[in-house]
Length: 45
Image (tube, rainbow, N blue to C red):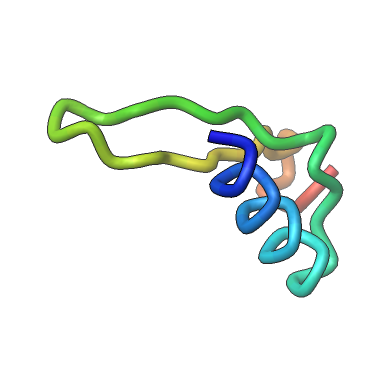
């Protein structure tokens, strides 16, 4: 699990996203889902 989280963190940083803003969950098929909140104008926070 730690390796998976390291990969996710690396991908987030590569895309200029803060890992602390991400919400991680699993979908119905057991796949990892990374989601972010958006502000009311539809942009990133």
